[in-house]
Image (cartoon, rainbow, N blue to C red):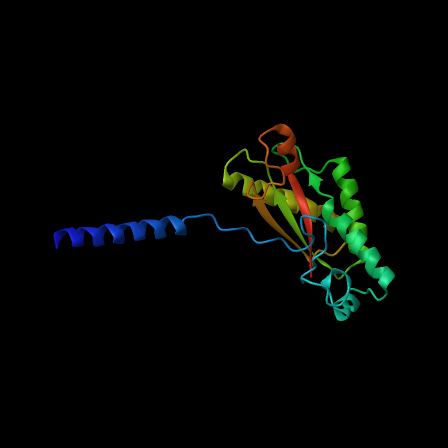
Length: 190
């Protein structure tokens, strides 16, 4: 009797331990909207309903895009828009001249496609505390938003978020990887 009670207790304890360890595991990060890692357009939908990018014709018309040629042009320009990041010096959030040139191209895109919504993501390298990097990422995203606002463009369709060091694009532990991770990334939202 005592041995059975000990076996039941041991089994119960093992079950609780396994459950507790499973609850502490890292949760997967959901895919970001916009372009996938392979450069293919997702634009808020999967599959191909409505043609390129998975958007239906009504959504294309809302964006002011009517012909197939305009759709192709938009998709090409949107890909370039999302794939050009703004890079920063270590521990900095001041825009360099090359960063300003990239932002000027983004402003031209936003003027042409005024109805798109954009999220500006601030990212950092792995050095520093989580809290510090979240604040620095926010300053980086906001420096881009401020530059866009100073250009005269309305910013009500632009939002910002900081991921700090939580979403590195390069996983190495060297200066080249860190430099790639110190960035502001633009994501188109529909």
